[in-house]
Length: 177
Image 1: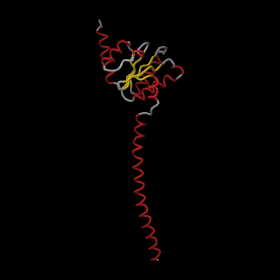
Image 2 (image 1 turned 90 degrees about the horizontal axis):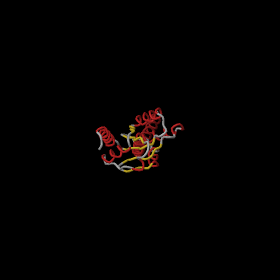
Image 3 (image 1 turned 180 degrees about the vertical axis):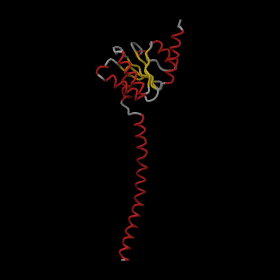
């Protein structure tokens, strides 16, 4: 029989999962409290939130939120990272933290994105993507390129006309003198 406290935790987890665009599951066994505080702040800066709780309660919350439950990845000392904005930025923050020599105990186990379970390699591939701002800048640059070319071509005719008129003016001033 589930108690009231656990039911409230499942409801809280479900609400967080429903707001999240993605979930990244990491194993934190072996990290100190200071290291966990550090990784949580980095995740928060990137637009995510890291929660530690019972795997069973998170499995129930995932089911209730309509998300797939990666049974094999929900064993052990796990932290569930909810991503609210830029998935690549949060994945990058986790990857960069785990790359540091003193933080080797943080393991990216899996992720859930778009109703699909991602393996750790796929989550790391997300971390290699450029940030949202960089992607938007690339799209704008790609769209502006042809327009810039058209403006250059159109201004070339006008520039040629101005140059021709200027030379005619100079020639007439010479002839008048």
